[in-house]
Image (cartoon, rainbow, N blue to C red; front, side):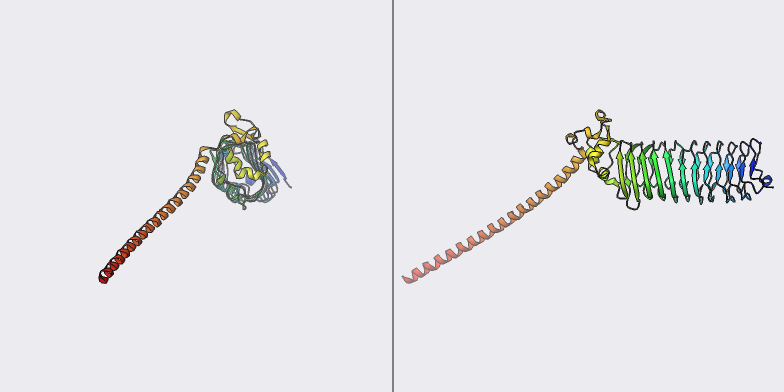
Length: 392
C-alpha cells in the first residue's frame, strides 16, 4: 500500500513523527503543530519525499543538516513561524530543490554557510521577515539559484555576504536602510543575470563595495538615496554588460578619480539628481558622463538636486558656462599655475645669477688686462728715457 500524501495539520504534534511516516510518502504537510525544533536528519529515510510543508508551527530553531537525506525534495515551505535565526548549515547540501519558502517568519539573522552546498534552487523567498543584517558568508557556496528575494528593512550587509555564490538569475535588494555599502559586499558573487539595488537608502558607497563582483549581465542601481560615492570600481574583470543607474539622488558629486567603469559594456544614466553647484563641472568632465557617451542626452535626462533654486530642474536648462568652478578646483589650478610661475621664476633667477657671475668675471679680466697694459706702458716709457740719456 502506497501513501503518496500525508496531511497532519492542527494535530498538536510536539515532535516530528518520523517512525510513523511511510517511506513512500511524496507530499508531507505537518502544519500548525507545536514542535519547536527541527533536529538533524529529522526526515531521514523519506527518500521519495518531493514536497514538505511545515507552515504555522512553533518552530524556533532548525539545526544543522535538518533536511539531509531527501534527494527528491522539490519544495520546502517553512512560513508563519517564530523562527528567528537560520543557523549554519540549516539548509546545507540540498540538491535539486526548486523552491525554499521562508517568508512571514521572524528571521533576523542568517548565519554563515546556512545554504552551503545547496544547488539548483529556482526560488529562495525571504520576504516579510525582520532581517536587518546579512552576515559574512550568509549565502556562501549557494549555486545555481534562480531568484533570491530578500526582505525590506535590511540595515547591514557584511563584507563577503555572497562570497562563493555562483550562477544566480536574480538577486534583489530593495527597501534597505544602510549606513554604507561596505567594502567587498559583493566579492565572490559571480555569473549573475540580474543584480538590483533599488528603492533604498544606500548611505555611503564605500571603496571596494563592488570589487570582486564579476560576470553580471545587468546591474541595476535604481531610485536610491546615495550620500556619497567613495568609489565605483568596475575594472575589466567585472565584465558587466549593462549598468543601469536610474532615478538616484546623489547628494555629493563623486571624485572623478574614484570612478572606474572600464568593465562596463553599456552605461545608462537616466533620471538621476546630482548637485548642480560649482561641482557640476567635475561631474560633466568625469568618467560617469564620459561613459554615457552623449553629453547632451545626459543633460536632458538628468536633474539637479541642489542648490535649492534649481532643485528638480533638468541640467539642460542651466547656463553651465555661467556657473563658476569651485574654490578647490581653482586652488588646484592656481597651484599648477603657481608651480609653473615658480619654475619660471627660478629659471630666470638662475639665468640672472649666471649672467651676473659672467659679468663679474669679465670685469675682473678687464681690470687685470688694464693693469697689465699700464704696467707694460710704464716699462716702455722708462726704457725710452734711458735710451735718451745714453744718447746724450
